[in-house]
Amino acid sequence: MHNQLMRRYEKEVKNNLTHIETITELKLKISDYENKLHEERDKVARLEKDIYNDQMRRSRVTSAKQKDKQRDRSQSPPNNQVHSTKYVDGIRKEREKLRKENKKLKEELKGLDFVSKDA
Image 1 (cartoon, rainbow, N blue to C red):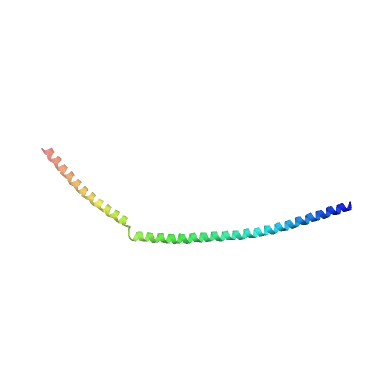
Image 2: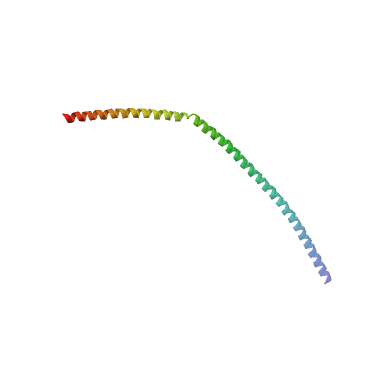
């Protein structure tokens, strides 16, 4: 009976040693994975910061370009606006001519009505 107990004990010790080795290996792997995870998070943070900085730089460049365009627009109107202004001026002149002609015709009509009442 003593021999059986000793064999069982040795078997349990051997199993425990195997478990301890497995646990140690797993802890090492976990530690390695945690280090890799930390490195990858740092890498992601750096990349996000780079992306943000690029976007900010681009928006500054874009806003500078937009300011230049606005300044150019305010200094001289574009061709289509010049054309539109000339077109509107032409229409205003024509409208004034038509108003004057309309006024003359109304006066003439009043004169004809006045003459026909007298007759």
